[in-house]
Length: 133
Image (tube, rainbow, N blue to C red; front, top):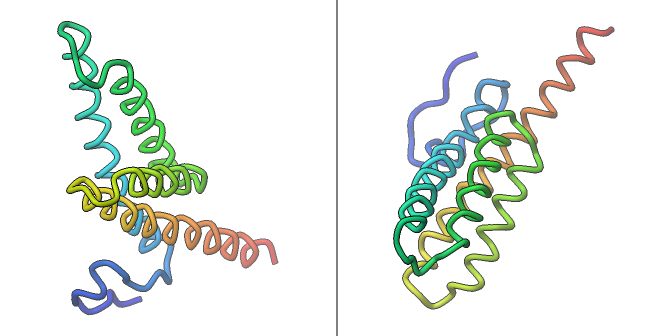
């Protein structure tokens, strides 16, 4: 199968006709989640040694991002949906502030991850059915 032609549309919404393409669709959300886990882990560690405005919330965010990253790495649908819900709740709470932009970006990335992981599950199930016949 030929690769799709590069275009702006294909950068965010490329065809998911193979398992490899479906795996690639989750990568932006995976990178974003891993970055979020690293940042919140640093904030949580610094907060252990000095008073922090985030307190224990930083530890919760770090653990949440680590779990979501691990689930996306393992192609788990639940992780993509949890990330989407987490970013949607963040968007609702931060509506009208400058942080709403990053929450909207998270919502887009996790939406793409949902699309890719569900396509991967469908394609791998179709491939198993072909081999079992």
